Image 1 (cartoon, rainbow, N blue to C red):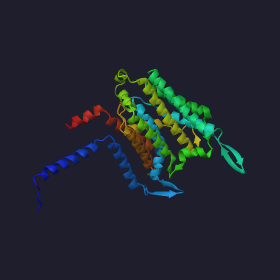
Image 2 (image 1 turned 90 degrees about the vertical axis):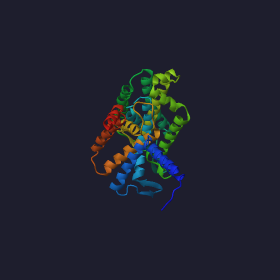
Image 3 (image 1 turned 180 degrees about the vertical axis):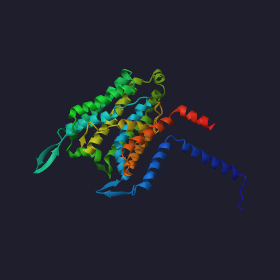
Length: 360
């Protein structure tokens, strides 16, 4: 038999109320749903794929299914970072895949690889210094972003129409540069960007982390994040409040293209070639899906960089799961379309009102 003092009863009630409020805050956190989806996918992989979480060190590098997923998700994570800021301003950029193809093509054509004899040993050297080639590739990506920014912010075109122009023209330009052929790269140092390792982890992860940290600092420690939210919520009010709306929109499109250009370098160095026809194909749709899965509103204003990273991991984990279970690759597109449909429903105010009415 236990006795409780009168003072212990209010304390117990207060503790239970505190725990309940903490649970409610966790469940209503914007990242709770994407994290739950990612954990559910990982749980399925744990039971369905033998040795999914097994990690091993070979040649000083960390290998395993989880490492492979994160490594392959790196280009998508970069594209999602840029897309997050664009969507936060009520915009959209469907030219991301074309920018990926163009930047990879420029880098591959400039680097190439010429075989020379070094003390009797055949060695491949770059056509031009790799630093200049990378700068030219990223410069091409920045020009693409500036083009989109001028059309959207300067001429006032609808974002989907403005970026559709570059979506077609950008990949067409990349195909013209390569005559529709795959350009192979033979220069070994270039491969380090997409398939190299640093401290036992893929180097691509360090690139993603660097871009993410810089972006997060700019969004959190400066007024830039607040300005982007203001433009996304009400661009007219933001302009009347003194925010240079056109300059800000121009910046987010340039930033999105820069992220896509870096993704193009990562992809082309990973496959050791530039394929203007297929590189970055449909990447813009995966980036948009990753951003929306992470909790960023398609209506603009609210955005989450961390959520976009989680969304990219969800997409790559889903792709890995489908392929590992032996499901035909075509099913992957069907699953993604279903996910897009569910995401759109979750962000529809009319659908939410309909659910409330049925519950009432």
